[in-house]
Length: 165
Image 1 (cartoon, rainbow, N blue to C red):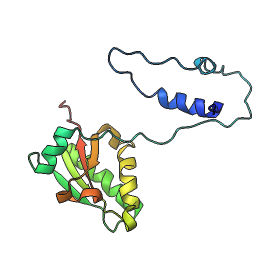
Image 2 (image 1 turned 90 degrees about the vertical axis):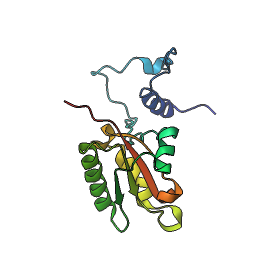
Image 3 (image 1 turned 180 degrees about the vertical axis):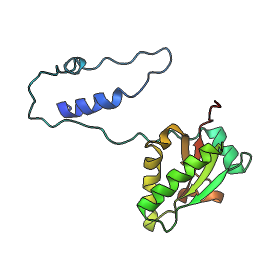
Image 4 (image 1 turned 120 degrees about the horizontal axis):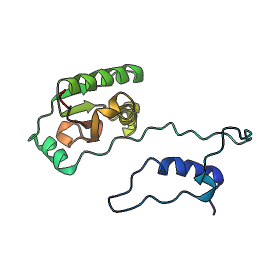
């Protein structure tokens, strides 16, 4: 089955956001996507493709995850989102991460809970919120917490080292 032109356009948008590994080159886009349309071109009947989903932060590196889970690296703060609505949880998470980064913390724990049947809204949405501005510039990675810290119902959030001015 051949991909549709809309699928190729969407893939080109996604592929343009990745960087090749050292020593490798980026693949060339298909010929019909190589040249952007001129601004004076007549509008087409086809709908414009917009990719609005944020790419979630990368997973925490395995060594750091192990240090956090074993208690060798301190968890600088904990935020429990149980009982909050989505809007309340998002505001609390944003404020918490901004405050933690301002205080120079490197790793925090966000307790989302598992939700009903293990598919909670906060558990699913927290990584999305961490991938949006202004948090995406502060977050180095996120991973599911170890069982002793909440397991599937909690996230380790690694924060980037803040540069001193």
